[in-house]
Image (cartoon, rainbow, N blue to C red; front, side):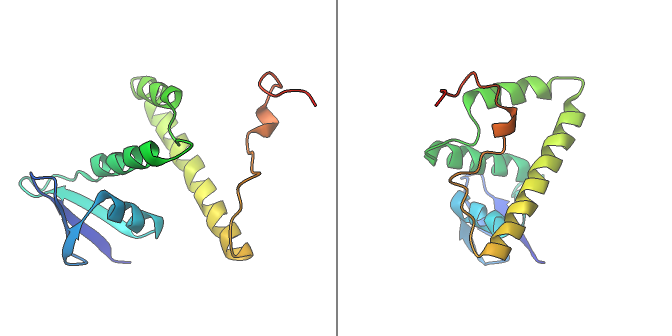
Length: 135
């Protein structure tokens, strides 16, 4: 699989050498959604800034969504965890959990021709009943 080698310029414009055109954060998001490899570097220093750009993509998507992926409480906890001695453990755990979930979604989509998550509640088993109204 080829990698989108993207250079970000001081003007914040990004040029994808694979496609031979300037791209936006929405384009980067589309590449990721299609499971294409992405690498972003600073045009002046050559520094790998992929993580920073992907964080921008997540931030943009989070602001546009009706139900944000990263709530305020989630972000506060991530910041706290990042300063914790167990940060590496949490990072690995989150990465593995998200990878497993993404793989399961791909397999389900492939098997069913679509994915309806409208009634999906993976944490329903963890519910203590405090937040739900009794029927």
